[in-house]
Image (cartoon, rainbow, N blue to C red; front, top):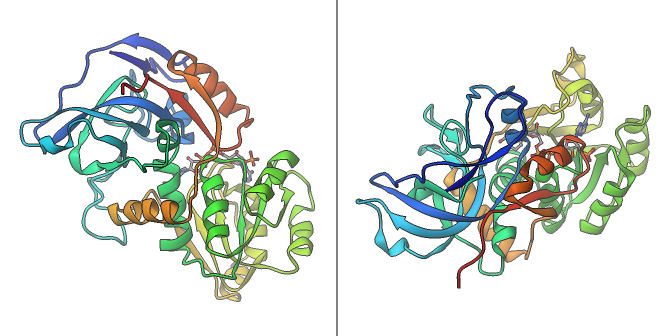
Length: 337
Ligand SMILES: NC(=O)c1ccc[n+]([C@@H]2O[C@H](COP(=O)([O-])OP(=O)(O)OC[C@H]3O[C@@H](n4cnc5c(N)ncnc54)[C@H](OP(=O)(O)O)[C@@H]3O)[C@@H](O)[C@H]2O)c1
């Protein structure tokens, strides 16, 4: 089969012929029709993601059809059109994952390949209204966004919410999820056009985080502070986020794109009765609830572009330059009717 291989840290993504996987006892073999990229794949490619090993086949997101099942897997799954939940081995506790938890695409083979074997419990029926490309854009970002916004952030209707880095793959879902819940949504971004795009998706307004006075402008624009802030940047701007919280507010962090959080004034946290919550991926229940939520609210992923497998390197360049709005999808193979 063809697969995208990272041969070493910071090397171009190469399409190579590799051995097709054989499904384990309770696994299913998926013919991947579409995959999508996440920032995680980019960190792995750079060699700076914890545990990155080379050569490897990355990719956490994929949709396709079930082509074969392992000897102990459910043969009724054959030919099903599916989407893969990349949050593997979560365990039974909805509050947090067990030590065996891992994300599809490292250490095990990822979705940037024509075939993949995954545990049968990790596949879910593709939402019927979704194309395979839309389904491939959904899992990791949709799941992360759902858990951050609802399970951890406990967003309530009518609350004011801030989403940082509006152009990100997860952020696109966050804006749509919060708007669908009836919250008032504001965003930050490095591009004016991404703020405008977020407004089309349901946001009220937004500011450029690249402006020195962004936090002051935002407070003025929003007419006060925020009940919930969902952030994936961390870095030097974090203390401003604390200043933007209403009393009793929550900050949910799911990434650290802008690096370490420098020292901040503790009073900004305790005097506001504020909560800082971390979140990663989601439980099987979060995934199921996310699928229900998007279908009930007719939410579709924002797809920046769809590129063929051969252009995966170009897709990563595009991500590196932060040009995208929403998800970059890789078309792996054609649908067989
Ligand atoms: N914990 C988890 O389960 C989980 C899951 C998914 C992702 N993540 C992490 O979350 C982060 C975002 O992931 P993603 O897949 O959505 O990434 P992505 O699609 O590559 O988007 C990253 C976005 O970050 C924004 N950004 C960059 N520097 C920023 C800054 N200083 N302040 C505010 N925003 C900034 C940019 O927004 P603009 O283009 O609008 O400027 C950029 O588009 C990554 O660090 C990723 O590793 C974690």
